[in-house]
Amino acid sequence: MPIITQKTTVSAESAGRVDRVIQALTGRSRSQIRGLIDHRCVTINQVPCLSDFTAVAAGDEVEVRHDPQQNYPEKPRAKEGQPFQILFEDDSILVVEKAAHLLTVPTPKREKDTLVHLLQTYISRGRNRLGRVEIVHRLDRGVSGVLVFAKSVQIAEAIRRQFSQHKPERVYVAIVAGVIRQNSGTFDKNIVDDDTSIHRFCSDSEDEGERAVTHWEVVQRLKASTLVRVHLETGRRNQIRVHFADAGHPILGDPRYGGEEAKRRSLGNRMALHAASLSLNHPVTGKLLRFESPWPVEIQALLR
Image (cartoon, rainbow, N blue to C red; front, side, top):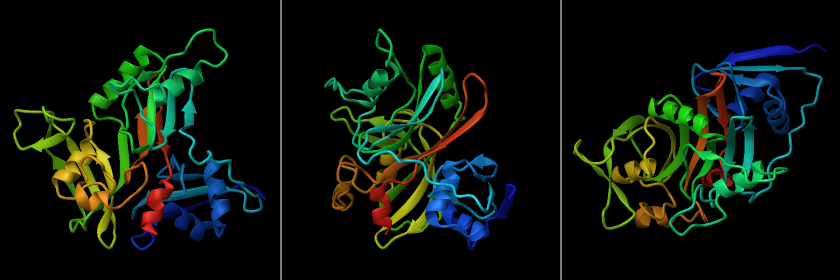
């Protein structure tokens, strides 16, 4: 049977996870839906869908191109506990999915088991000298998700220019303490270093610290917490954590800004914060690239 195209525009009633929309459209099982996604058969608004947990909103267009008589087996998943997974690699960039417990870069303690060390070893395979990756941005320890690294200084500078112009789309999911009544909002507050500690805090003054802008929307209200989707306009250190803590809704499991209410919700060695997707233009070809990371099992367990 030839390849067919099935598409639908998501209604307000069917908004939510994309796998449910695909199931209604194709009648396939959950494992087959994951297989369709793995084989790049599914797009959302003409952008490849990379996860069955991707959220869709009313008005989004979901399209599936497949052979109804063909099986689409899932591709092997990364082993649980593996510190990173390569999502994309070419001569210019590396896009990876970082585990929560892993440091992105060394602290002043000079740790040797960070993500940047592991990636340097990874790209050095088969070479006579240690390869090098250039850091573009980072995720805090305790936060999982998508990161991009460059393979040269020039490429790193090109990607940093995109970040400085707020071009890459960075989307996070988080579970925060307390029930947020508003459906969406924006935090636009400068973030300042505390001279006496490693903490940062918000300031109402425009004359101190760095301007930080965080857009957010409620995905689901839980009994005593809220699942939010967060869009970063700026990328300051600890930005999401500081902004939500300042608003009285700290990230669950945050050991630094969480307060007693958030710290009581034990998530192991992580916070309920995940870098779910990253979109940017390839620094050489200019092509728009989008990468997604499924919600981690700890966040899924909290939602259940």
